[in-house]
Image 1 (cartoon, one colour):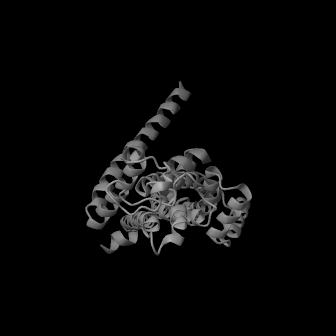
Image 2 (cartoon, helix red, strand yellow):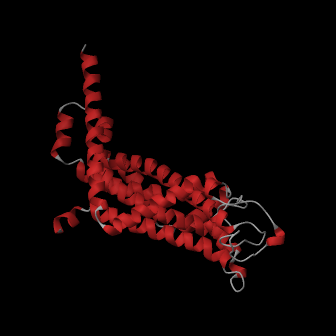
Length: 302
């Protein structure tokens, strides 16, 4: 009977937290979108996500359809953004490149978030020798530039999409771990955490039910900022020939392929470069907006 009551209490506690989180999210979203710049960046990101999901239906041609007789054709009604060196439709490849970039970035952020937040939470909550070991490892990886670290890992493992996600995730894991640890260190000293200990709650329950929910704000801010960073990093690796390989469309690869034709066929590089620029602007503006919205200092100032 006692065990059944405890299970019901845990379920009620979880349902309350879930319902409260949902209502807070909707309320915060309405306030966030009340600012024009936030609405613009949010709408742009939603549009990019829509393109990424429905790119197979939006593309007028197959992205890998080769037509050498129509190579480097200028923009026209048939080929909205022209064709590349093998006659493939650039517009279709750019749309599919959106799917490649966003799916890779999302996979990287999710893996980095889950791993980094877990490491940071354990490090900040238990401190001591565990914290010292984790933080020294983090410091070692932080001393290595992100591009160099990713290039080294891809060179060792190979330019496979799974290995590419792993290479891009290492830096994100470190960033999420550092941010989470800092927040957990401040939260664990609050009175309600002491009350949880007094009630006999286990460490894992306290971390996942009472500590991590209060870390959501900084984690969301970091996630939105890092998405654009990951997309740029992936494009950089692809530009250097160490990222996504042909025939899979990638903005970085497309820009690199069009470099030698900039004087007489600039559309080969301009089209993917423009999409990369718009994507970076959208996610950076969204990240800045989310950061300003969730920053307590900003709320006090206003």
